[in-house]
Image 1 (cartoon, rainbow, N blue to C red):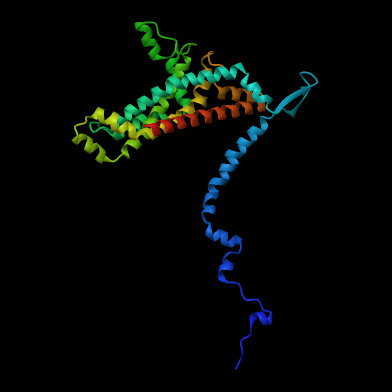
Image 2 (cartoon, rainbow, N blue to C red; image 1 turned 180 degrees about the vertical axis):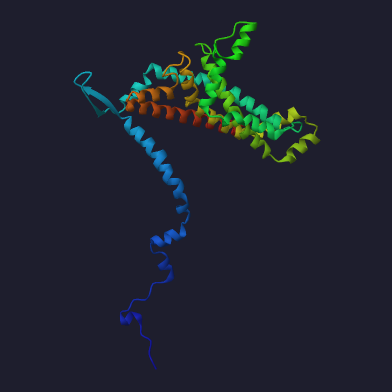
Length: 322
């Protein structure tokens, strides 16, 4: 009869338990099996890093340098490290400060008007008495589908004193305002952006209205609430997140104002190359001063983030207080 050997006596170590095997560091194959979602993220992460994070990092890096010329006007140029000197130049630049002030005034006036029109239009389309809803949704969205350059050129034609039928009709009854003059050019541009983006914001708000449960409106009708009371007391508070979203988009778009003033620059001397911060960054880069243009872009991006994040925080605290 065979006698079982004692593992301790024979010097043979017992095999590791299954728990110890599980505690061993996972191999690459195990990680691949346990976390397959990592591979699904790659189609997003790779373009995000290459085309978003890398350009931002390079712009910040470029903004830390400056161009120095040696040997007079026709001497050689070289790029030297300047630290935060370019940012100090941006903040002290009168053209940049005037452009920022101009787009802030533009946004304070234009954004509330645009979003009010979009909200009212969405409420009308969502009401029970509205007809041809699909047609009007498409009709309001068509201006957003038109390229910004084409829209600006079309409105520039309507503003031109020599070509516009609107100006000609106004001259028949009274003196037509100078839509391209120094006092009205900013609001002429605001009219173009309002015409373009009202339908886009209206669709966002209208989609939020369509997602609301109908039981709420049935209960309000039973309680005797009319259409206007339902809109102000139920619909608008419930679509407040959509209003916040459209406002944030509008703030970002206001600080990035570029296409419309560039087109108007070709027909009016009142729009200069530094009319908006984006136009100034483009003009500076076109003159081969990439470091200053990068600093302009970084400062503008930081300002956009601060305003957008500040508005979100304000609305969150306001909502929590209510």
